[in-house]
Amino acid sequence: MLERYDQIREKDVVINQEYIQYWLDNCFLSPRWWFIVVLFILSWAIFFRLTKREEWPKLLFLGLTWILVAANLDGIGYDLGLWGYPGQLIPILPKAYVFDYALIPVTYMLLYKYFPKGKAFLYANIILSAGASFIAEPIFQWLHIYKIYHWKIGLSFVIYIALSYLIRWVVELVFRGKGREDE
Image 1 (cartoon, rainbow, N blue to C red):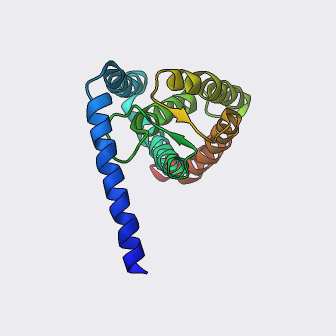
Image 2: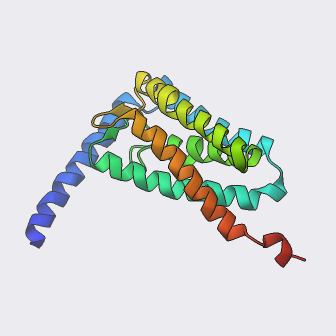
């Protein structure tokens, strides 16, 4: 049993070394790579510019929750061969660094800041999820940063909406009564 595992693990190491070489030859310091770097930095710069320090605990908790969920789901989809990332910030895990650690959490933190509940949250969520799924994902495919193998963009739309409500619920649960406790 362990011998079989060791064989599989060795293949995995070889594939990772090949991928690192691919990344060095085709991604690192390329215009696409610089675009990813700028997008990553710009996302967080916009967040800190548009938010106040007193809002950070709740918003950053929401963002961290998004990071945990997005990075794990992304890793599962990547490992199952549903999608891939020919252009990446770094050649090791997580594969979708710019999405999972910048674009997704920052956009949803700002959505929550400006549209925290009710119909405004619903409509903003639908617009953001549609934009991410039907506009951003195809653009990132065209830029060769993201590649779909066995996935439907419509599923991304539904998952973004569902996760947004679930994560918002968790944040509200954690911060419920926070103001009263501080008095």
